[in-house]
View (cartoon, rainbow, N blue to C red):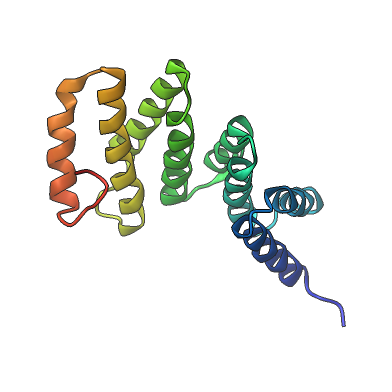
Length: 168
């Protein structure tokens, strides 16, 4: 019997995820690129792009530009604010690891985009808000930019995440 298109796409995503977890990012990238080439409008588009970004960052050396591009495509196509915030936050985390100051400044900007526009009452946004506050505080300190915002960010973090572990 022939597998349905959805079953094939689901298998590709699960297999790519397993390849990443078993430290085979090239296999994952090949699977995901084929899935996206065969069906650019796959229902698993966002899953595939998030995994593609993870696989690119798992390469040695990591492909930060490729990962950022995959995440930017999510932001360009999603209508779901929580998915857009997840993509922004993950892109910011990638940029924050750069040794280039301009990329770390871009990361700070992206973290603040999440903080400025994410709905704090939507539980789907909370992980990205939490990670964005923690990331922004670290970058404000390391870049020595707008350090006067750190107390406000810390207060917001403690209010939203009283048991939070990311900002100590």
